[in-house]
Length: 398
Image (cartoon, rainbow, N blue to C red; front, side, top):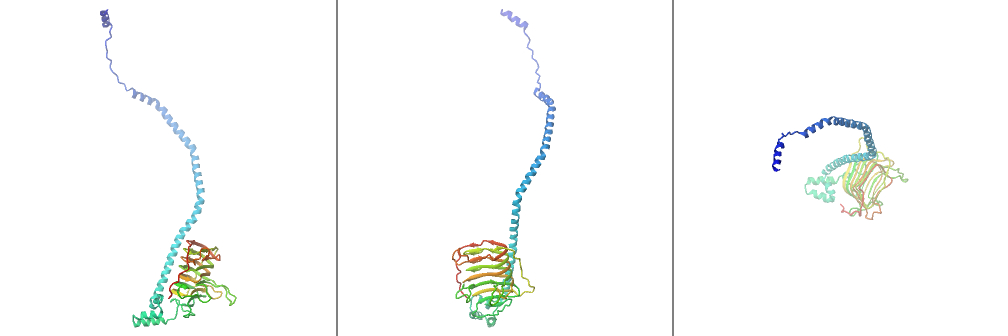
């Protein structure tokens, strides 16, 4: 049986035929076929998407633009009140900065001009310099006499000169005269009476007044060391009210027991950097006009610096005639013994700056007072503080 099986296998066996291998890129062929088949639908889909996008954009564009326009309108409505409210304030502060800079430069130039004029006046007189330093007339003459006989003669000649406003001599002066109409060794008031003649510049600086120096006293019957302004109406003897008209008036670096402003019209009222032992600032808004003092060929400027006085007065002392000064500067005035008073003044610009006022009796008593009779067109009220300030100390006299 085994042999029969072997024979049959040989007869009926199929020969082992090796077939050749064929490597076909079926994946690439399939991808190409799929790409060719699907290209047309894909392009149709892309075109349809573009058409739909264009339709949607065309439909929504007006609404988007309308929305943007509405947002801009609402922003403008909400921003306009703030812009309108801020614009005048910003303009005011910018203009104020430039105004203060220009006025500061003008004041500086005016002050320097006055100082140089005063310097040349004093330079001609060593005797005057020694008097300002507090030496007695006899000691001043003796001190300079040591230099030379010629110097002694010059000093003696100066000592014999009549009193004058420029030299700071006490007396009653009828502006614009530099020589007093009244003067006496027992009369220690500096009084300037203004009449019909307008004055360009009046400047009084660096003086001590009232009881602020040793062995001093106010004039008999007087209670105020400084009086500036017009005078009231009086029945007997008959006198009609007057005002002091000023283009620009500066009151700075005063030391007063009390400082009072009444019956004043100022186009520009500037009250800044004052310290007081109690203050009441009650100025009222109104329509005072701006002003400057012209007058054509005006009188010479009246300038004086340094000195000790019982009282200082600048008044319009002629009945029914207002005194007129274009520029009035009252600087560094040290007082004691009563009130410093500014009354019946009409000014283009009135500056009250860097003053110290007080008697040390508490804030309830108002030493620095601007009454409701003070009327302004524009008012700058800055950095005025209440602080404890005692009465001024007494300084050594001449």
